[in-house]
Image (cartoon, one colour):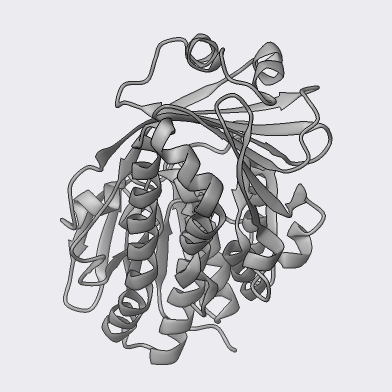
Length: 369
């Protein structure tokens, strides 16, 4: 397809923004990509991609570059706080015909997407104002430069400045969890995705190759501790399974508070929000990156189908994406409520029906985009 005359600005060069830029380039568009932060390495964290993320990467023609990275995950194991089995989910069966589940370094996925998007990102370009015109959007940057676009895509995360500038919604609201992420080397041997569920807290360990483990933990709350490593040892010191050996070698820990974004509309005029800017949820189902990748595929398809009719494309995009993102939000809340059930009641239920319950959380996502 030849280059489209449509002028598109993508704000944000994370997973969502770069995936959108890649999808648009494949559809014949040539978007500008800006990022308010300077270039730099991402924090060292792991990332788990369910099967629908793999399918979206295939649609973006990036499955080849991703395939050598990280490690394919075949099974999810759920244990109680002592390390005794609760249930298992066969991921190969669950996502059969959709895609492999994979754990890999977040920075490596980012590099693949950056290359796929063409590599040209204007860093340090923060948007100061948006002027929503009848058939375009006027954009002024903090450095005083200005431009006019036919479409502005806000892919700048849950605390999106584009969302505020376009009057599409206020700040995100707390989702009620404090989350901890770390990468551990020389830890215990862990073959599969392994989660230990305690009292309103959980600890997840996922291998992603080269002897590395992606560690994710959460607890109920809305305030991050000053010393996250010390808090992890305090909170999970009595857990069993691989947790004690992980805590022994734990070093740098990234901590944050989960946030939710729920909006009545994702676009105003010719400004559109995608990814976490539009529909952030707690990371319980590991669907943040997957939803962003799917958003990119559907947005490019919608624009290609309608040509220069941007308003119709945005309406078609939102009508296709809302059911899936709503499903993820609702199932995330369901699973979080399951964690709040006292273990004496929850654990027998999971031992009997856990695989079916947890597999059901992804049912809608197995279908086409």
